Image 1 (cartoon, protein in one colour):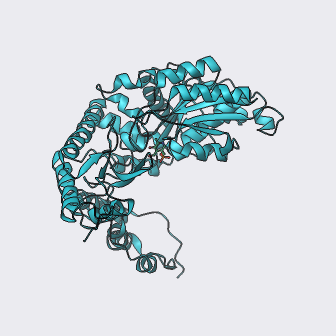
Image 2 (cartoon, helix red, strand yellow):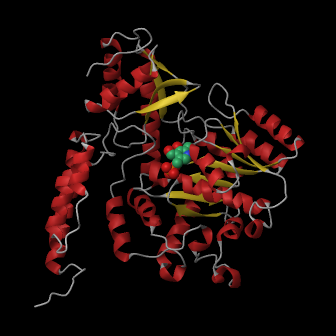
Length: 484
Ligand SMILES: Cc1ncc(COP(=O)(O)O)c(C=O)c1O
């Protein structure tokens, strides 16, 4: 007899799947600290293991969980490991996997509100709360995005639409003067990438040099803007960074906002790494002027520990966000409903998943105080690491520690030596750190964006680093030899 194809789970299968999922969550949580941070991967073998033809007859629920346990998990990076301190990436908060499962189950399409009424209100609540952290009022709005890069891409599109009234029809193909964008030499590459994608052109992006704390030099910004104007160009936007990706430096936002106000330029803040440190009482002042920006990118998938992907774009005047993105007949013909927003009018996507749920569920489950104290703990840990490095004879800091990124180097060591030390740290399971480059000098970087990291983890890392630097004799002809 012919079996009908079956894509749902019957009650038995659901029970089995639920039990296996719970076991998976428990085992993963309990084994986290013992898991390899980066698995030793034989790339050919891994490809042979996973790149196999799909079966005509399915392997069933138990077969699926077996594949996860035997093939996928052992070959996945343990981002949640307490000594995973590379890049700006943290572990998901504890309720997130459940929120993600629920979002997948109810599969709301967060494009227009009739397809996702509760989700529309929840996204607005999340955006309003995030905007409020920077003093944005009820004229502001925003949208959740795939990340900080996407938020900055959309923000620069909004800035272009706001600058040129005919931008939607003419794009940049007009006889008008060249538009110029300003950012710093420490800006994230997503700024260049957005400028390239949007047709601004990298030749029209100025990378303003930084001071000895790696903050944008406002005097040079002003000079450059003046020179560009004198040359017949049109300065239109500054992207400042409250929390640069390498050292965590915070650009002087208030002074930059003054320049933008005086020169009629859009101010966008790339707060993908740093902006959410506004939640820390100790750092709030540093972010005070952020509310003067026209738009802010930030990343709940970093410091709110939402699982990937959850970025956010905030715009001080939400009608400008809609003017750049709304193409729907609802926006053109119906007055905006202040309560039920159609998020397709706020960004480039039509179909959108329910990202707001994973942010909202964590804020509800743990409360804002839990996030405030996580920020403070991470800031303390970074400072503790900096203190230990300063007292280690073979190590030196490369930059002041403004947030939680700690850049340091082994005295006298070359780039190759630092690369070898990073590899040794990862291979022996001590930690995953990243490389750093500041002022042309090479070193290493630990970025504490992990609520699981403890002082003992930091001590272990610095001990091992000191050991590697010392045992291998420090600089030998300018190069450090690492034996593993
Ligand atoms: C300052 C800064 N901007 C932008 C980004 C890119 O963010 P995303 O990876 O969410 O696109 C990062 C990522 O670390 C960052 O640190």
